[in-house]
Image (spheres, helix red, strand yellow):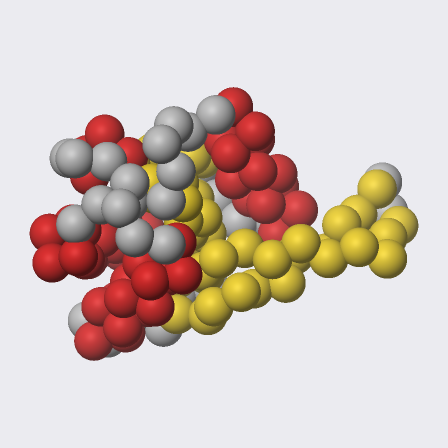
Length: 131
């Protein structure tokens, strides 16, 4: 997918949300983040989406690339960053992490998904960067 228009990104987003809901329904809350990571990877791949796991995000300051690399949990279709959590409460630094990854990776859309909730809709947050 060379160009990612809004309509296509929204369709991929719907697939991500549905896939995450499927994983949450089958696995429930209370497991380790790594379990949800593996399950979501399988779920989204089975839907025909291209998924990269533990995607390097280089740290840049102005025009310089610094000797530091962060790792986003997943990249879907080389366009959407997923950051997964299995925590009691999402705190502001988790949200800042997604926004930083979006800027550093120059991507337009990202999701923070916390699987440690009773209803996944309460653990699913969408973030945009010049979308």
